[in-house]
Amino acid sequence: MASANVMEFTDSNFEAEVIGSDKPVLVDFWAEWCMPCKILAPTIDDVADANTDSLKVGKVDTDANREISVKYGISAIPTVIIFKGGEIAKKFVGLTKKEDIEAALAELS
Image 1: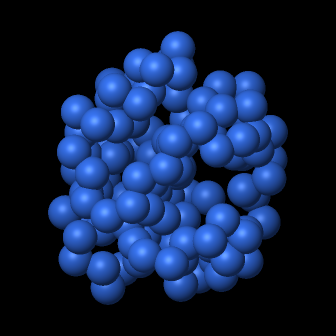
Image 2: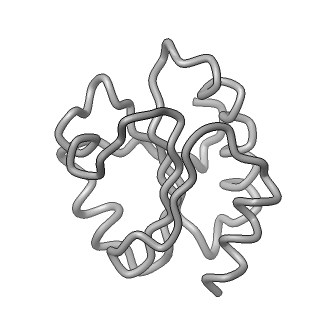
Image 3: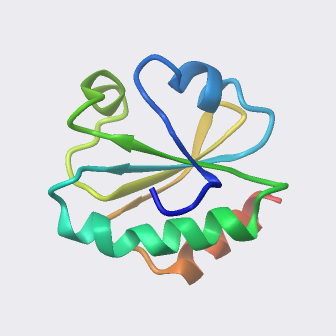
């Protein structure tokens, strides 16, 4: 992963890192073979780098973490879900513009 501010979420740490987080969490569901996911990656890195104090950002490799991907109904990637207080606050499916993600984050604050 390019940014040090982007965590790796897995089936085993998702509950603690995302659901139990005291600040909003942006989760990028992706896979290595997914070209749109690779195109979205710099946007995710930019959002993570710009919001280090107010937001936790991480990625879930859907191939390696089937349990959490199924639990949240990930049927197309990339899918970006913003969690707040352990609940889904916003969900984007497909390539998403940085402006749309930033607008959703602004609504949460």
